[in-house]
Length: 59
Image (cartoon, rainbow, N blue to C red; front, side, top):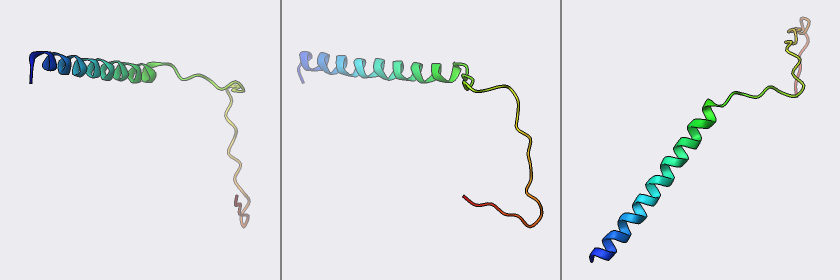
């Protein structure tokens, strides 16, 4: 392997490592971002209304 080929190989590896590091940084930033609220979020929770005895439901 000539010195020129070796330098080319090093530059390709360096480029891939930098791209991988940038992708890792972007994925970590996504986890640090705040979770947006839904547009129709009124802050209340719906109460749990159980079915009467003997009733069933299916989708």
